[in-house]
Length: 98
Image (cartoon, rainbow, N blue to C red; front, side, top):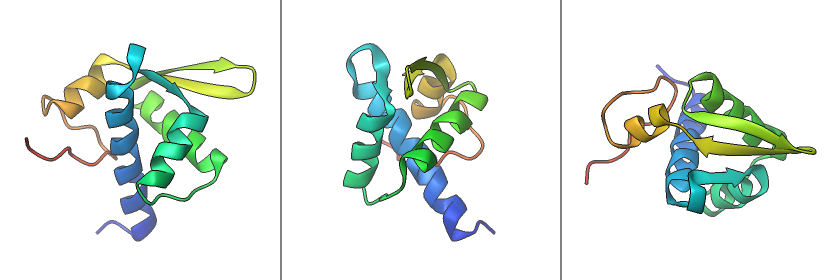
């Protein structure tokens, strides 16, 4: 059974992927993602958000780049496939149907 912290992380990762899919260029920096997560009730530190972004990069769902000290994530095909129910990424909530 998943503990509460893992549950929150899987939800946050799905929110990140959904936000990237909606952004122009399918990319966003950590500051934007921090604010989006806050809107959805995930009041977490900048480092926690960076950890979730790195996890998604490790799963090949996003491509990470750095601009100075800021991380930028860009949606990759695996992330898009997860959102479209083509694959299931471990550690990321499944998107709702519809």
